[in-house]
Length: 352
Image (cartoon, rainbow, N blue to C red; front, top):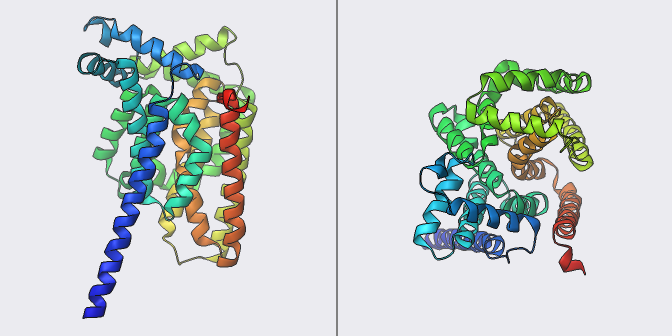
């Protein structure tokens, strides 16, 4: 009995240490973008200018401004309850973006440290310093895994609406609810191949024009803006890095799914692997479906690729113990290299 009590105390102690560690990591990761000097990068200066502009509007115009509703609401709140709406808007966005992601990682990940490492390398600079509105949309999407697994449409729809209010591209979450439908699940690779063909022959341009006609005005108006930008010669190409990323990710997903099915691995919850890999495959499908408007394809990728933070730990759990050392080495090298590349690209001041 005494021994069992000691074991229970040790388990409880480890849980407390783990929770404290996660909270500390989340706080540190949030406070850095929250308190970064305005102007140290282009995006913080742009957001400061936009926040100042919105704060100067009257209460009626602020909701007719065209920006996402929650962005305007947060600016309005910080205007009245804080001395510095610019700083406090950035603080709120930084903490919401980081805390929701870290909470989701803690809730769903098979290996929290690996997930955090992948998040740091692939998403941290991009999300929390630059695309702060889509950062929160992606965090809400990650939090929605349980709703997708349990087919809880009501909760998922609520999260989709909230994500869309943070960034209009959050509406892309909606079709992911149906990822477990037999037709979609069994034909994902065919759908990707079809989307690539559509992109090559520019049929997806017609799809975008159809969506502009049928989607709600607050979404179709944004699509029209993207389309107009394209006609004016702005954002006419998807970045080479994003194209390479999607090709590599597609290859990795195909190989991983093939290996698992051949080995008939039973020691993990296969539904987790299936759902997460299907989400990533569907993300690639949407990327190519919307690739005719590069800025839209990029937004879709920004929001939906976040599930990589759960996919990598699942692979780590699947492979043999002898392979894990090499796997961790590759992940560590890749993520640190990407993090440094992001810093060098967005913050060259640190390399001068």
